[in-house]
Structures are given as C-alpha cells and as structure tokens.
Picture 1 (cartoon, one colour):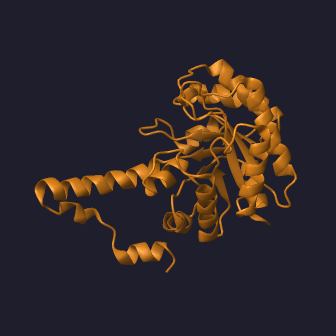
Picture 2: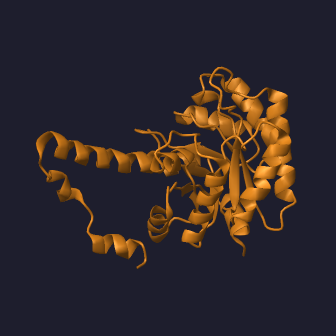
Length: 268
C-alpha cells in the first residue's frame, strides 16, 4: 500500500486518530517511535525554527521542508501548504503537483489570503481554488488526500453559518477532508460534523476541554495540534534561558531528557 493509500485508509476506518505536527526530522522520528500513524507539517513551527514568523517562508523552502519530513520516517505525511502559494486556482493546482513530488500523502489548502485587511478569499474564488486543487490531486500518479481549510474563525470572522457553507462547498468541489481551526466546544464540533459529508479535522487548542474519545463521538475523524508541540518546546527553552540570564542557575536541567533516551526514540 502506498503512503497515500495508507493515509486515506486512516480516514475510512472507524473512530478518530491524532495526526501530530513535527517541525523537523528529529521530532518526526520521535513521533513515529511513539506509535503515531501519520504526521502533518506545521507552517508556524517550521517558520519559528528558521527564525521567521508564520507565513514568511518561501514556497521553495516549504517544499524542501516537506521533503525532509517525508524522508525522516515511513509514515504518511500531510503538509500545511498555506494558501497554495498564490491566489489563482492555477497556482494552487501547481502547488499540489509540486507538493506531491516531495512524497507527501496529502496537503491542505486554506482560504486565508495572507492580508489581514481582507483575510478570506471571496466565496466563488475560494471554491474554484479547492476545485483546481482537487482536479490536480486526482491527476497524480499516487493517492493524495486533499484537505480544504476555512479560516473564518481564526481570522476575525466569527460566522459559523458562512463557515459551514464554505466547508460544504469545498467538499462538493472535491476536498477529501474539511478543516476549520477555531472550534472550541463539542457542541459546535457536532454541528459542523453533522452539516458536512466529509471527514473533519479539528485543531486541538491550549487547555482544550475535549479528548480524542469525545471528539470521535462528536463525529471528528482527525485531530491535529498545529504549532502546539513546537510552542511547548520553545516555552521550555525560553524558561531555561531566562533562568540562566536572570538567576545564573541551572535548575531547568532536572527536567531534561537523557541523550540515551532521545537517541532511543530517534531509533539510533
């Protein structure tokens, strides 16, 4: 079974699964060693590791990063392809084809324009972009699971009706998975899952009041964590650095993993 076919099979079986987000080859290998069945890239986590804000990494560097994550393990990998590196449907289709060449099993296209003054693509253009991505993915030699993201709820447009309308249209346009980051309670999750006819991805938030089992019961198929793992790691790093700078002490070292344990998780 190809990675793309294996990834699709995860969406077709009973229950939900967690797809965590590594930000480099090492974290990808560690997650694979812990038993996760698929991985997803994080645009923010990757950008932070390069000293850049989210969205500031070039398309070529994003694709190189995808290639490195794919090569790190035998697991299927889905990529955060942001807005498809262009506004037009044609540019989105080109991005899907280029992403597939890196060995990815899937990828997501969002309707965020990158301009906070006008953050969401007009409805018809957003649907056309998803349709072009779906047509490109169907023309690939291997299976590719396309995720369409509606960004309303995290871009200042707290409009659930429009969010559901967009998700439904993206599904009809050919998206395999539907995703709207910003769902924060189970009742809203249930509403979205009941309204769309495709597998739904939910983003776990800090202090999320739901579990994998509860999300599965609500109809969710896939749970990702975005940049959370990266932010947890950076939080520990900054806390340790602040202790050294402010106090000249090294108490943070007591929570450090041993090199031997890290190497074991890396499979070395």
